[in-house]
Amino acid sequence: MNLLNLTPEEAESVLSQWIVDRGEPNYRTRQVLPRLWQRPVATWHDTTDLPRPLIQALERDFPLQRPTLVSHQKSVDGTVKFLWKLDGDTAIESVLIPERSRTTLCVSSQAGCAYDCVFCATGAMGFQRHLQPWEITAQVRELTLDERYGTPTHVVFMGMGEPLHNWQAVDQALTILNHPSGMGIGARRITVSTIGIVPNLRRLAARPEQFRVAISLHAPSSQRRFKLMPVERKYPIADVLEAVQEIRKRVTFEYVMIKGMNDSDDDARDLAQIARATGALVNLLPLHPGGAGTLRPSSAERIKQFASLLQSNGAKVTVRRSRGLDISGACGQLRIDTPLGSDIEAK
Ligand code: SAH
Image 1 (cartoon, rainbow, N blue to C red):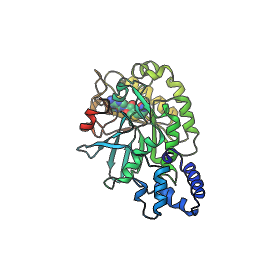
Image 2: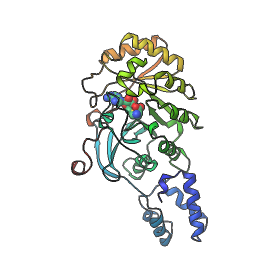
Image 3: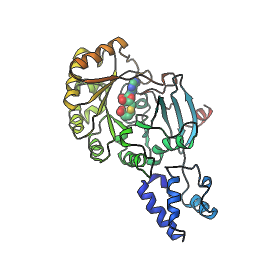
Image 4: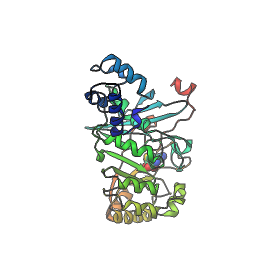
């Protein structure tokens, strides 16, 4: 059984029963449980305070599954992109972004993505499979295990995949990341970014913790959004905005600036109106090359004008600085080209 796929509470109850069944003292549970996430070990053999037979039994009954680090690339700006191999030929990436006192890890929730946003490199590779909870949280756990990095202060679900398309696993992973007996990362330091899978957005909004939500909006009207994001047909912007009202914390609207597609003065005014109505913060970012085909980013000048137009129309706005461009680690650039095997192994 893979304890890392359970919530901390479930893992505790499985472990304590197992401890009792083995005739071990109850306090063993309190020694073993923190080794899953709080003070993780790579293998049970690395625990020093347990008797050898117990370690061997843990190895046999609850082996700790880990992804394999295939490569890590460091950008000139300090951003690090990790390529992990999961079982078989599945691979995923995560990106670590250090900024002064915080380090943000951008995690993947799926291998590939099913939603095919026209500007996104992950979308272009298609959908491979959902990740299990442990495969999502392992991206954090592995950094905790690695003394070069340590546990990130913030986690954003902005890597590969659509987190709300894999709700069951993401729901579970959120609990593991946040729970005091899990990784203990504050809910306000965990952001789920989504194109707006409405029923699951509602489920996320209904959770009692204050997880942050970012909505990939990218256009202020159904007609224009549909050209960029095919999901608009199934979950139109109006339904997404209605579900947004159920989120108790301020949401962020992510808005990739694409020349001639969504960056007109009218777009800015319409977007400002939506942002005002929902109290959202608009986060502008330039289109990054990668999956975008013939699309081009709006100029820096245009982004500035767009931002001030939003502001003068009463919207709150920030412009995101691109990180990790030189290692294709920026938003929307994550992509695995070859099926795992020869090519990736060689990196
Ligand atoms: N599926 C989720 C999680 C991925 S997050 C979502 O879409 O929100 C990745 C973020 O990067 C999203 O806001 C996405 O719209 C944005 N993005 C995708 N392709 C991009 C590109 N080429 N340039 C800049 N941002 C991009």
